[in-house]
Amino acid sequence: MLGIVAASTALFASIGWASGIVLAQMPAKALGAFEFTRIQLIFCAALMAVLSSLFDLWPSIDWQHWPAFLVSSLGGILLGNLAMIECLRRGGPRLTELLLCLKAPVVAGLAYFWIGETIGPVDLLGGVLILAGLVIAIRFGSQAEREEGVAGKRLLSVVLLGLLAATLQGAGFLAVKPALTAGAEPVAVTAIRLLGAAAVISLASIWPSQAVRADTETSPYLLFRTILPGVIGYGISSSLLLYAFANTQAGVAAVLGSLSPLCVLPILWATKGKRPGLEAMAGTAIAVIGTAVIVLY
Image 1: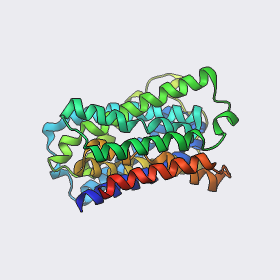
Image 2 (image 1 turned 120 degrees about the vertical axis):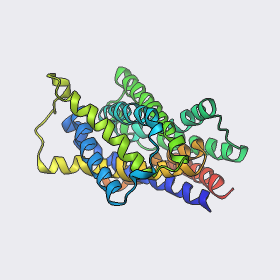
Image 3 (image 1 turned 120 degrees about the horizontal axis):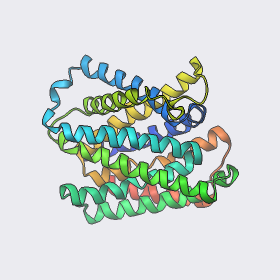
């Protein structure tokens, strides 16, 4: 029963990230990767810290895991999300999500070498089906990349940024798994990760360089559009996935938490009229079968 609940939270995390990344494209392009990330981190860190205090979650934290929190905060959140937002700005939500689905094999490989965790044959089959479905669904989802002129050197930069984001984010989640299995509350762990990243990016914003300045003036509407996907992604989805990491194998949680590319397709269809083709639907069906294999068996 616990495994099914953990799998379900990872799936809901995927839905949340898919919604958030579609909402994030406009404000990310307007503000730039640094300012967009800074606003999100500061607000979401404050929100999760308040929630952790209100529900008295801080006592669940064993501070002997501070090196893991540091790695997860600076690498997984700060650097990982800066790379992801820049990838989103250059390549759009569909291509970004395709590249981020590589978190699953990255986490599975790191979990094997780092903490000696292996994936059973059934879970491995389900993971392979999901990844195959993801690649098919996103590859044939629409003509978005060509419409947005993502090709050549620009495409190469998008791919490199996406791979970097997937690796850093995956390692960031895996780093805190020992703390989670020791009893740390996911919301409190999320708050710690966000507070560390928010502190560093706030200090970096003092640097007198155009690279850390917003590309446009921030309005109340733009601020709201920036904060909303941050709450969905950093707050809700990250906490759900951390719960899954605590209660099931890291590779399985990462695979189920990588289904956001599939969720992006119907969202883009509904919001922008980009209808997925038959190949995308076939890829979705394959991924759903893979999910059922993991969850039910």
